[in-house]
Amino acid sequence: MYHPSFAIPRMNIHGDLSSHHSYLIAQSDGHLIKGTEGFVFHDIPEDIARFESCRIFLGTWNGISWWVIGIRLDLPLQTAYSLLTLREIPNGTNSPISGIACRAVQLVRFFTLTKYCGYCGSRTYIKTDEVAKICTSCKKIVFPKLSPAVIVRITDGSRILLSRSPHFPKNMYSVQAGFVEAGESLETAVCREVREEIGIEISNIKYFGSQPWPFPDSLMIGFTAEYAGGEIMPDGFEIEDAGWYTHENLPQLPGPDSIASALILSWIEQIAPY
Image (cartoon, rainbow, N blue to C red; front, side, top):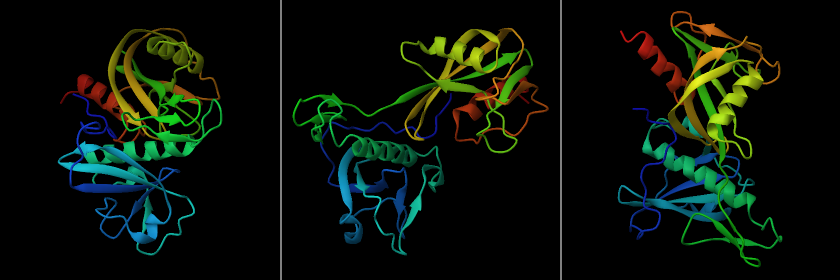
């Protein structure tokens, strides 16, 4: 079974708070604050608390109430502290703590971007009964933004189609991906992205798994599909190169924390299980 990185553990976000508290401290640019004992705090240091912009309850897990403290970007970092990205979490991206950190970073960003109502411009405040904010004037409710994106592994017998974006690290290739547009089903988005960026048709689309991808707010929905015809023609903008590969001549692949890697590795296990 596929176990996605950056997925939060099953937390109780509506029940009673535990008497034991742990805090993550995050900035709206996606960085966590790391202290001498790590990035999980049991108390908020006074020199950091002065720059607090918000305090959000994340949920109760493992007998502990988890909170994130949003910190303004003008915080002057003392020598005792450093900045940490989600990919740098010491416990690894598959740990429950990384999922809690993912939730923390996204909610601080949400709080920062929704200080004012997008309908009438009034101030908003955090709702206590759900993860949302509500306008003080018109009472409109806004929820954290998620940007759904599809990612698909395309195969043709013993071959897999891999492509390269100009934004990838040097020599790295991956499977196809793209954002879902308004009014589209996930399956329609898969077909459109493949047709627009590579020029081929696919069939037998099947769900594989999903992964929260907090860079900054994507939700990746993974599929597998089979080649159904057409000539590979990279669009030259989103994709600069694409081609067929076997498990014996694969290029550099995405890192193990991504659903792209999981899609490719699961295919390798099917093609060459030993």
